[in-house]
Length: 342
Ligand SMILES: *Cc1c(COP(=O)(O)O)cnc(C)c1O
Image (tube, rainbow, N blue to C red; front, side, top):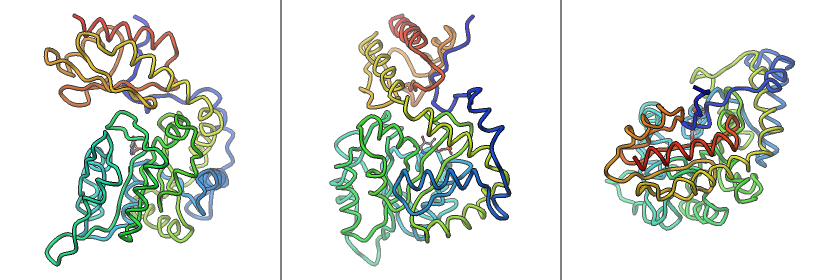
């Protein structure tokens, strides 16, 4: 059988030959001791793109997220965030285990929480109630199906946070996608938060890494937190070179992933009674009819060479990325439809 078409995540991409060449040619130094020139170049590039004073390269988005929360929150307080946030569901309770904070999950009327839900979630001051110390936003929102919170929506959230003197951390693992999908300057999104995490190993196709951006002072503290969390890396310019390459070469083609996700969504929606969440970006969530579970559908598709992931019992996720082309998406659509109609 041909190579399986792997739509489980945009993290499955493998570095291209050109990206590997950029990694091999990278100028490097000891980044913990006195700096690595390619890491510094990446950090400068990200800070400038995001309109922040400073940025730091991290081994993972999870570590960068937790560092942002660590810096901005206080132990024994609440962090307000979307009920389906990556920070709640996919970081192994690090909010509690590392940062000592309690998540306060918010649900809006749409798929992602909004300023009204935030306002309603902030408790009136009481000596017996938890205090809030931080607001987090996720853009695009993975669990909602790659949904974009628009600039207006994000500004409204930031304004409510400010009214209550709460800082904002943005989980922008896929902020690249949000900017492309809405033709918004990525710095305008970033301006709505004090610290912003972006990932290089999703749609940009780098093998490893994320960045945290914010004020110079915050990033000085973040440098120490990163090291304390075990994220001090030495000749990491080899990895930073891949990230720089991804930003330069792969970000400009990201709209193709969104077009393919839309194509897949159109092909699958309605098949066998399935309902597709209309994708804003590169994530296609398929809600299943009662007669088939997510793991059954995933197994049927895998047997036909198409890999998708069960998201929960009644929903599967398919993600488009650099390593799939139009023909792959056409075939994936046929396989998923057949599996649904069986
Ligand atoms: C992937 C992801 C992360 C974590 O990034 P890792 O590099 O896998 O640790 C955080 N938030 C969101 C929304 C993600 O999709």
